[in-house]
Length: 194
Image (cartoon, rainbow, N blue to C red; front, top):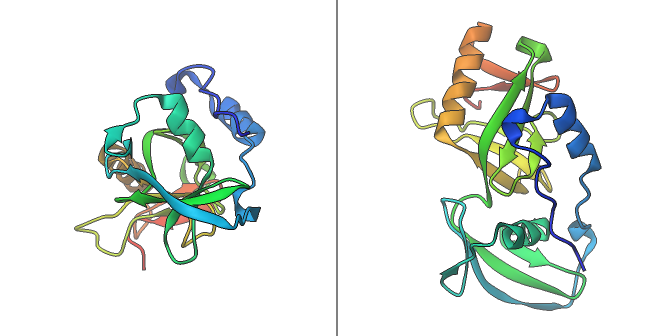
């Protein structure tokens, strides 16, 4: 049995980037990519665009339950989202992205900057080569996302909340690069994808 992901030991705003990196390194998720159970079905669950989780039309209000389910979430090669255990695989409807990036910490400037995001499940993700940022191809209609886990390009993503997106734009403009881009963990992310 998988236990719920622990809550942050203190408020995100009080964490240093070093503490956040230690929490990231200590985080162990179930090996859902290696589980291929024969029994399949529908979970009667959905994740709405605002990040809220529902089961049979009723909102799941217990954060620990949402964190637990989020640890067994996987995206299939055909784009479906599933909750998977060694015993069964159940589809789950996802309106937009399964996660939302709701807070961000930035340390450093330019090419040495590191960005850590707190998701709505209290998971922490440091943007970088394994967790790229993307902004969509239309500067007038940005689509800011953070890759959370799974195969890049077809894995689980977090929608970056609008206020955080504007913070990223301000940081990129302050860096003075042309065209504007944001760095994190040694990787450059253009604000408009080519």
